[in-house]
Length: 262
Length: 266
Image 1 (spheres, rainbow over the protein chains, first blue to last red):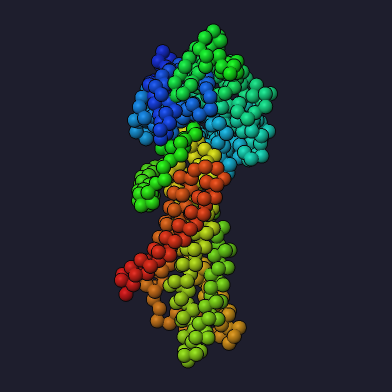
Image 2 (cartoon, rainbow over the protein chains, first blue to last red; image 1 turned 180 degrees about the vertical axis):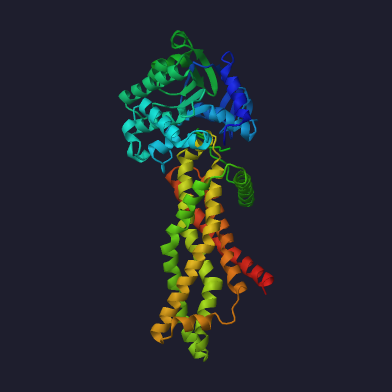
C-alpha cells in the first residue's frame, strides 16, 4: 500500500509532539469467559518508553496486537496518532501501521527471505519513490546499526535467536516509524544478548525519539530501557510510574512481582 | 483482521457439527471476498504471482508428465484387450486420445496438483500463520490476502490448463509407445486416426475446465493454511485438510463441469 493522503494526515499528527502518540482508553478484551484486558488506560508520548510488565497470560501481548490493529477490543479504543485502529478504514489503518514498527516475540522473520530481504520488505511495499540502490543503502545502514553487517545473505534459520531479534528490530525501524512496539525483546536470550538488545533499543530510542511500548517479563530490561513502567494483573494496570515509584509501592502484588515474594 | 489470541483460553464447548459445517462455508465466503477485493485493488503483486507460477507450474511439470505418461500406458494396455475382444482394435488410437484429453489428463492433473501444491501451500501458509509471519505482514501494512492468497490462487488458475496440456500430451505419446510395442504403428498414423473427426470443442473445454480445479485447489489450500491454529500439529492438520478437501472438491466439481460441458458444447 503506497503512502497515501491519509498517511500524510498521520504524519502531521505525528509532528505534533504535544499530543501522545499512543492513547489507550479503557480497553477491554475477553476470550470466551476469560477477560484478559479490563479497562486498561494509558498514553505514551514521543521520546517515552513504557514497559508493560505482568504475569504470563495477563493480556500484555493482546494489548500490543490491539494497538497495531491485529485484534479489536471489545470496548474502549486504541488511538494511534489520532487514528482509532478498530474503526479506521483500510487506508487509514495502513497509514497508521506504516508509522509503527513491531518486533514480534519470536521475531516473525519471513523464513523464505534472506536477512537483507526481510529488512527490505516494508520498503519494497511502501516506498516506490526510492530507487533499488537507495533501498539497499537504507537496509545496509540499519543492519550495520544493529551489528549485523556480515549476515545479509543468510536465511533466518541460519542465525541465532538474538540475531533474529536484531533483524526484527531493523525491519521494525526501516520505515522510520514514530512508534516502536516490542513484544518480549529479550525473551529466550542469554543475559549478555539481553543486555546487548537493551542497549540497542536504548540507543535507537534516543536516536529516533520514538514512542515505545515494551512488553516484557524481564525486570532488568524494563529498568534499563523504560521511562515508565505499567504493571498489570488480572487485565488491569495495577500501578504505572517510574521504577522508583514501583519500589516505593506498598501494593502486595507489586512487591511480589519486584522481589519474587510469595 | 487476524485473531490469534496469545493467552490461555478456556476449553470451548463442543460445537454442533451442522453449525460448524455452515460456519466453515461462511468463513470460506468471507475469505474469498477479502481475496477478490484485495486482488482487484492496485498495486498488484506481479513479482509474487510469477514466483508462484513457477512454484505451481514449472516445479510440477516432471510429476505431471510422469503421471500423464503412466495413464497413457495403462489405458493402452487395458483398452486394447477390451477392443480386441469386441473386434474394434482399430479404435484404439481414438479411445486413448479421447480418454486422455477429455477426462484422464484433466482429472489426473487436478489430483496431482491437489497433492503437491495443495499440501505445499497449506503447510507453508499454516507455518507462516503459527509463527506470526502473516501477522508481521499485516503489521507492515501489507495485505496478506493480496500478497499470499490472491497470487497463489491466480497462479493455480493459470498453471492448471498448461499442466493439463503436458499431461495429455505425455499420455497420448506414452499410449502410442505402449500400443506400438505390442503391435507396431507409426506415430503420425496413430495421431491422424485418433484425431479423425475431432474438433476444438472436443478438447478445449476439458482442458480449460482445469482452471476451475486450480481455483478450488488454490482457494482451499490458502484458506486452510491462513486459518491454521496451534504449532506443528496445526501445520500438519492444515496440509492434510488442504489435500483431502481440494481432491474431494476437484472430483465433485468434475461431475458438474462434465455435465455443463455436455450441455454447452453438445
